[in-house]
Image (cartoon, rainbow, N blue to C red):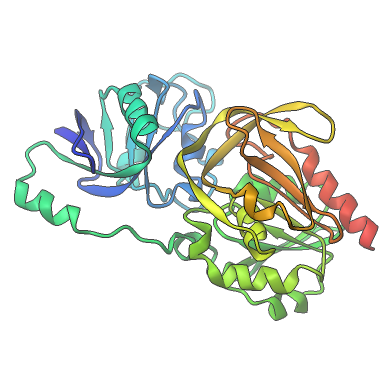
Length: 354
């Protein structure tokens, strides 16, 4: 079926529509060459239409072991060329069948780099995937549908669950956590108690944790006021480590501010400089918001990491409290694992408080 992507600025991009039907979401682009299944199942993409800039997607198939959450939360998928005959020893099925199974609208045969250039110049915007034959009246109706701003509630766990181990006990606030983040933290020896995003501070402390972990997740951090209040109450209680959305929420809880980036950071090869060591790490990133540096200048914090490409804050730590965070995904999936050492630093922080 012939389909199209319509951006809110009126731009149209045409291609072949497979799986799903009409869909609306925030259109973003990812520059990764691999890891498409992990991207599709990263809850941080909830409510978004993801455009892959690499020209060929799907060449190594799909495997259930690559999933990063219970299901994909993306609103749509756009690729230049999709491979329907994958070749890899781990392949269990084709990406096309995967998209159809999960009813993810996918537009292929599109000039994805033109879409990326449009977003880079005009900024991230809403978009609609639909059949090319869609009547103007139906399109007008789609244009009136507001975007959801409660994505965290859609992706968080609906119940408390545990991952037993012999080491420090860590309560994980699940704002849309990737499975490999849990795996990376668990393999350090930590016992994990994963709780819903809405869990209050008193309940978290009732588990008698040695540390608190703030996960990645989707959307505008300022829409998650309930979590900001909870984190604020926990600041002087136990060591805290935040990643991605957790990094932004930690800054807000300390009194800082966040802002929306023009087109975000999404890919598996973003350079980040560790200001302490001077070393540059290649990181996996997926975020559309950043911590406002002016808002934390007078706070009792130190910026520890900075994006090489645009200078935005990629990490900070509190000068007095045992709390630190990074904007990127140190466990990768997809991407490099250069920054896995941060999980060990969290263990060290808990050991100091022991």
